[in-house]
Amino acid sequence: MTLSILDLAPITSGGNAGDALRNTIDLARKAEEFGYSRYWLAEHHFAPGVASSAPAVLIALVAAATSTIRVGSGAVQLGHQTPLSVVEQFGLIDALYPGRIDLGIGRSGRRRAELAKDAFEPKDARVVDGLLIPPPFDWSKLAKHPHLAHYATLLQQPGAQTPDFADQIDDVLAFLNGTHDAHAVPGEGADVQVWILGSSGGQSAQVAGERGLPFAANYHVSPSSVLEAVEAYREAFKPSDVLEEPYVIVSADAVVAGDESTARELAKGYGLWVRSIRTGAGAMPYPTAEEADAHVWTAADRELVKDRLDTQFVGSPEQVAERLRVLRRVTGADELLVTTITHDHVDRVRSYELLAEAWERP
Image (cartoon, rainbow, N blue to C red; front, side):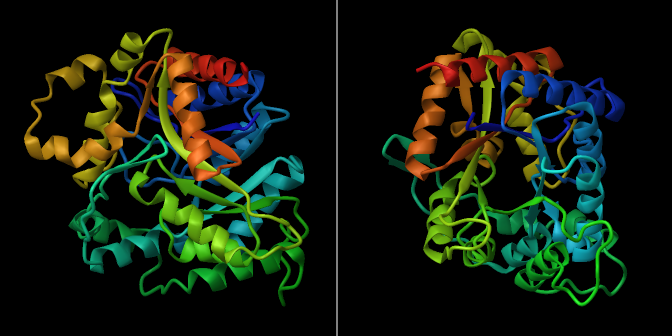
C-alpha cells in the first residue's frame, strides 16, 4: 500500500501518557493488519498533549509489538543529539528488527532559529489542479515565543553549538556505512532506511536531493510550501547507492468516518488543538467535541488556524480517499503519510481502517 501513518502518541483530555502509549501500540498492530506500509513516530517536547518525546524508545516498543510493518521516526530532531547517538540508538533497534527501521531526520531546532529572523512574505491562497495551497503561516512570531527559547536551552548542553545540518547528515551516513574514523556499535552496517524531512524548499530538501536520499514533505504542518519543497528536492536530486530516482512521501491530516457529518464531529477538537500549538503553549491534551464547542473563538483565533483547518481532509472514506489522490497527483508523491487524531481511540483506529479500505478500492 502507498499509505503510511504518522503518530504523535496523542494524550487526550482526561487521559495520560500511559494511555497514549498503549493506544499507539494498539494502533500500530491494527495498522499492520490494515496493510499500511510504515508507522512513524514524531518527536515533540514540552507538549501536554503529546507523548512521543523519545521516538527511538517508542519505535523499539512498536517494533516489538509488530512483525512486518516498517517503523521509524518522523522525525528525529538532529539539532538536539549527536549523529553518533542517533546511529547507536537506531542501530540497536535494527539489530533486533533488521530491515524494518526507518531513520527520519529533521532540522527543526535550527529551522526555528531561522524563522525567528525571517521577514514574513504574505501570499494569496491558490488552487493547483484541485489542491488547495493556502496562504503561508507567519512562523516568525511563534519562533520568537519566550517559551521556545527557554526550551531550546533545556534540549542541549550549556554552550553547545549545533553543527551544519549537511555535515551532521554526512556523519550519520558515514557511521552507518563504516567510512567514519570511529565505529558505531551497534549502528555500523545497520539496515536502516535514512529519510530527510522538510517543510520548505530550503536546506533539508537540498541535502536530501544531493545525497540521493528519500524525502518527506509536510502538507499537514506547512501546506503553503509543500510544492516548493518537493520541487527543490527533485531539482537537487543526484542518483545514489540508495536511490536511482527521487522518492517522496507527503504528509496529510485526515479524519474518516462512515459519513461526512460524523467525521466533522470527530474532527471538532482539531482547531482548538492547533491553536494551542500556535500560541506557544504546546499541544494541549486533545479536546472532546464538547470542549471544542465551548471555546469562544475570536477572529484572531480563526485566522491562526485557518490554513490547517482548510487543508485537513475530513469526510467519508470515499471523500477523503479522493482528496488524498489529488494530493498525491499534484505533489507527485510516491507515498502519503497520514496523521489522524480523535479524542476516542476507537474512532482513530476506525478512521484508519476505513481509509485503508477506500484507498485499495479501484
